[in-house]
Amino acid sequence: MSDAGAGLLDAALRLLRLLDDPAALPVLGPLAEQEILYHLLAGPDGARMRHITSSQGRVAQVGRAIAWIGKNFRDRFSVERLAADVSMSPSSLHEHFRAVTAMTPLQFQKQLRL
Image 1 (cartoon, helix red, strand yellow):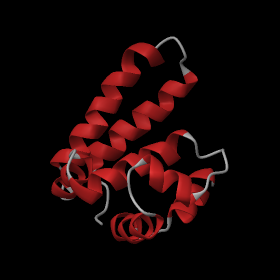
Image 2 (spheres, helix red, strand yellow):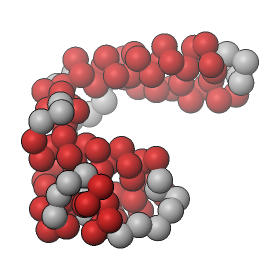
Image 3 (cartoon, helix red, strand yellow):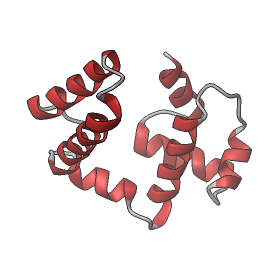
Image 4 (cartoon, rainbow, N blue to C red):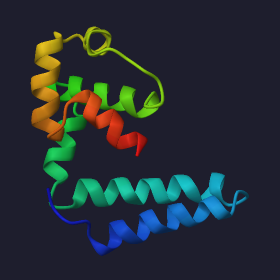
């Protein structure tokens, strides 16, 4: 993992500032999101990000689990159900999820809640 670059931080800050301007958010928000994605993919961890978001292998399955948790982080869930949803066994999901995020799925959810 590496530190965020100035461009990434600037884009993230602009996106956060748009929360105070609801009229501008639908127009400028997607542009800031695209810039953030660009910085993530072009940055020092870009290869890892591309690998995570590719549609192949266990990392892609973990990516789908991460996306599901991100959308549903307020809700309770079981690792067994999540594993079934991303076509993995619970033990495989746990192992690969930890390898990608250095956390278990439930720790990841708790981090998002904070």
